[in-house]
Length: 159
Length: 111
Image 1 (tube, rainbow over the protein chains, first blue to last red):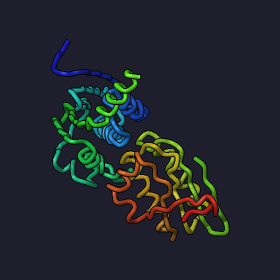
Image 2 (image 1 turned 135 degrees about the vertical axis):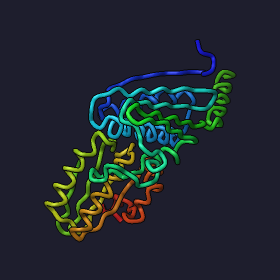
Image 3 (image 1 turned 45 degrees about the vertical axis):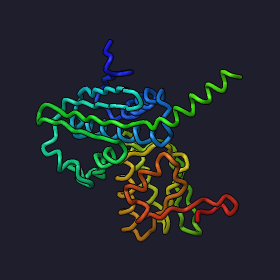
């Protein structure tokens, strides 16, 4: 077993938008072991949804492909990777700008990266044209929720 | 999704009751546009009490409806935003163009 992470999970699914809900719920369920707050869970779910949507809509552009999702836990920090083998992003800096979208006619808000960047602690984008895109994002789950729970368990044990 | 039209006030209320993401946004959009064009309401309220998830597809959806309703001379308001989706409303600035209202049970009215 790899000792660098405390825990790890990987899933692969077809690039169908009906899998977006599956992806974010799977991540939320995996992260639940860190006792995140409702807000932290919502932040992570929204960010995963944005990244997966990007892969499906922009990476594969409606064609069938595989989206890989890796989720790791190190102490109280979550690392999420979303990888596609789609068309890639030509200019990452421009793509990250708020309101920028290549598909404005479809009522896209162009807020995907902005949401990921403001809801997660860190977001990194690696992309090569014709090869694909990898998004790595991380978020620390504030450990005070966890300490409270430990205290509650300890009290229960004494009883 | 439930929609209620109040003829007297020319008010159209949509009670959305599903996650709003890329996957379902087209289906919701078709239904909304259909009813908006049918009633041409003076005021349209999107009630979010049963929405627990929304991503940027929802922002696109709301801005698109705002443009349509605005063009038809109506106003848009948002009601009952849940905690998990509040952050996305705040960061997107949507509430600056679509004010937030509360549902008053007693009067059965949005205010």
